[in-house]
Image (cartoon, rainbow, N blue to C red; front, side, top):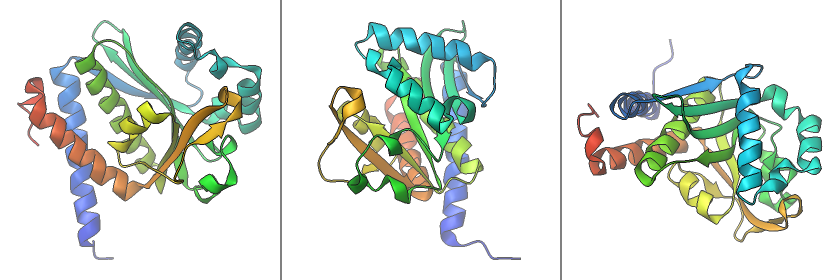
Amino acid sequence: MHAVSHDQERDMWQVEAIADFLDTVARNMALQAAVLEPGDERIAGINDHLVGFYADSGRGYLNSDEHRELDVQLGLSQRSGIVVVQDRNGRLLSTVRITSHPFEGGSLVPAHANARACTRHFELSRLVSWHGEEFRTLSTALALGTALLYARNRGALGLVALARTPQRRVFAKFGLKPTHVSPVTVEMRENGDYWFLEAPILSVVEAAFSYTVQLQNTIPSLASSII
């Protein structure tokens, strides 16, 4: 038998603590998180909801023919899962898509973003959260934490994301950092400025653990957690 290193022990302990936190959020806030695996018939309904949201929020470019062609080229719809967070009434609060390599972001950024080095990573994309600041914070944490554990359990060596500056701050709470020093222009997204973010899975776990502890200590409704 191979001895378990200190880093491995720490990682396993932190993963357990993150899972406990996610359970606490779901229980105390009456939320439920689920991973819809590729092929799940419910994904079509979620995607239809997102198409309408993008159109209504000024991000209709995410529904463009170019994006649809890239989806077909990479088989994104067939290979991607979606984490969904809902309240007790089934109202959708947060979603995030999770995709193994090859993923969308790697096809949208220039070579110096070094996306080609991330062939063993999973991509987090199309992160959307609705409804109120505290609920949005917790539902986003629940969505990303669930996605992290899903990717880790499937052998991901790291996580990546393509984000504008506001979303970059959200992903930073989970340890993802830019692979380049200044924003890159993504032509397919109205020449918007984006960041390609990456982190090894151990770093994501450590950052996520620290963030969950922070939330634990600042949100009264979570005070009963065992962490």
